[in-house]
Every structure is written in structure tokens, then in C-alpha cells.
Image (cartoon, rainbow, N blue to C red):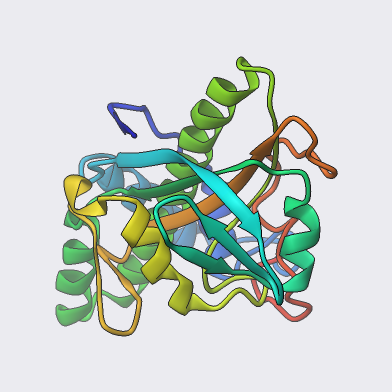
Length: 229
């Protein structure tokens, strides 16, 4: 198990605009007021990030029937068939949780209560971009560690995305002491703070479909997402 802190985050302004619904494909000429607010909230966001991540390498006991993977320690993940296909050849799973903390979402709530709706939308988008950037960097570190040991890695998969049941968050949290970085799970399997992400990555010398870090949209199966390029 490893805890990661003190990684510098880089906020891509175009990504923040995209999460607000202002992708280049949709908007040819951006309203200057929206651009100004976005830049201001990016600057504000940098003062509110408290990024922490935790991950661990868990040995796979067996690939069982009906999309089940049994882990050493007695826990079982249930994956969709497409994910199982991409995990073929894995001997381990990298399981991780990352967060940027709760300061930003507290500020988002404050701005909303004050009726500052454009600022609320922009700062919330900043938080989304920030946690994704941090998650990508932590995954890169985790991947590098196992690659240096001669392993290959699969793509990453998160509960609630690509058809994978959000209830599988419970298994993630049974394998990772996420409370050590200030993240807890609600009864509905939502993470608190909200700007947190969890994921698993297959690890093995015989991974059938190896993967490197890429665009966040690449593994998503949604055909009608408002945020895709």
C-alpha cells in the first residue's frame, strides 16, 4: 500500500470549459465573461486542492464464473464481460482511491447559496478536471512501479462507469483503507468528498490487451455523453 501526496496539478482551461458545456465543437466564439469567470475559478481552485491518493497491489486468486474475480483475502469483484475481456492475463489488480479533498466542494456550495451560479458551475468543473488530472498522475506512478518489475498493465476501470456496478465501490473500500486519505463511502456507494475517484487496473506478464494512460473518454461506453469531444 502506498499513499501519494504533494503532486502538482495542472488545470487545462479547455477541459474546464468542456465540462461546462463549451466544447470547441459546440461553441465557435466563447463569451468573454464566461472565459473570465473560468480563469478566475481556475486560480481559486489552486488554493483549494488537497490531493491525496492511496493504492495497493492485490493478488488475484482466481477468475471465477459469471464475471467474478476472487482476490486473496476473501473479497470478490464482479465485472462486466467487456472488462473481464480486458483483464485477461492479469495476476494482480492495482486498486486505488484518489481525492482533492473537500475544500473545493465546500466553496462550490457556498457560491451556490450566494446565487453565484456561473462561478459555481466553473469551480465545480475545475474540481472535476483537478481530480481527473491527479488520478491520471497517481495511476501513472502505480503503473510505472509494476512495469519496472516486468509486468504489463490493462486500462483502468471505475465503479459506476462503462456498465460496472457502482455497488462495487464496497469491494474497493474493503481492499483500500481510504479513510487514511479522508475518503469515506456512503450507504449509496458514493464517495465523500465528492471530488474523489476510485479505479482498478489489471497487472500481469500475460495481459492480453495492455494499455497506457490516454484520454479519459477512451474506455467509456456511453454513446450520448454531453462532455465528449
